[in-house]
Image (cartoon, rainbow, N blue to C red; front, side, top):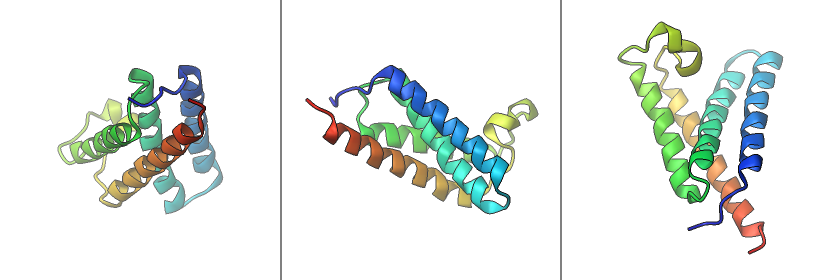
Amino acid sequence: MSRPLPRLLTALSIAAIVACGLIVRALWDGPAPKFAGDALYTAAIYGVVLLVRPAARPWAAAAVSGGLSWAIEFAQLGGIPEVLWPLLGSTFHPPDLLWYAVGAAACLIAHTLWLRRAPH
């Protein structure tokens, strides 16, 4: 098992990720903030995975966060209740799948580097 990240650090990271998503959306228009938001959405899920299972290995947290993001995107094909649209989206958009993978990969790399730097 890998060494767990401190829960406070994980929670602060999630808050920073959400703040980045809001800032990107507020400052820019067009597709760039949408795709950045997709990657950040998956990064936030990655953080939640680590809150639930702090000792999760980076590859496992990346697989769960990316897989969940993809599952939510594909669920949009069948229709998501309108009340959940602000959280889960409403329209299937294939390019989002790539950006979810980018978010999961970025977290995998950052988490792996963090674990390599952390003292034993």
